[in-house]
Length: 332
Image (cartoon, rainbow, N blue to C red; front, side, top):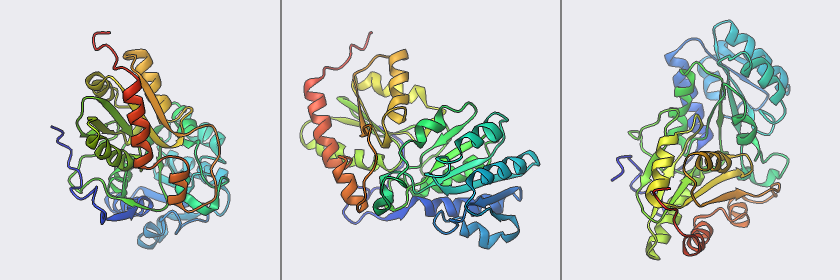
């Protein structure tokens, strides 16, 4: 049995919800309390990214750069060179969407421990539409050498992940959703950079999710169980470095893999898993996410329905996949 401490009420209608960005804000304040070298910078979106929690506690360690995202990360890199631990915050559409080249040249190449914080990522931004729904960030950040990429699954995990990257001594990107989402973990649940976690064991198919999609996979697994399909659910909050061992072991147990992400599947989380399986354990794979298109304007719940990212839609896709695709031969 999985020993991961999952929220026992996660599949209840009244499951507690909170914003992942709020968890980040609390985690940043805690990191600042633990280490006086932690500083925060923002590109004029302080309350939106919840960095105001840190600013109110440590006003002398906060820098407002204004709407100048390229300058934001260049200053952060200089602070890191001087021994600080900078968190550079903005919307993911702008950070890393607008300043990727500066992140590469001033932070990643120099291996400076700047923490890039991309708020309002994914379609959950809602009515702001395609220009603000950053869907390509996982792909563009994971290709940078030296860069750690973390996508928390809920507010509790976001707080833990923020504290962890504050201490890892590496360039790091953390992706934050905007709206309230269900709490899937507990304060006692483990979080370690580079680790994936089996939340539910199964033998017919492995459902692997990152960020807010792990909750949708838990919903899908419950629906599939009523159809006689045993689905294993693996939560992957760290995309880079990837927990190869846990992913490969799950693929070995079930013989089929489905990935789910609130991002472009091209080059994203699904692409990471596809690369690993093709090299180490060829396994039938289906990727669920945004498929070569941009977002739309609408309420978050409407958009999850429109793009087929709800547990109900996923369950239907997985059922068809399991019923039509044989499991791989385990001795391959």
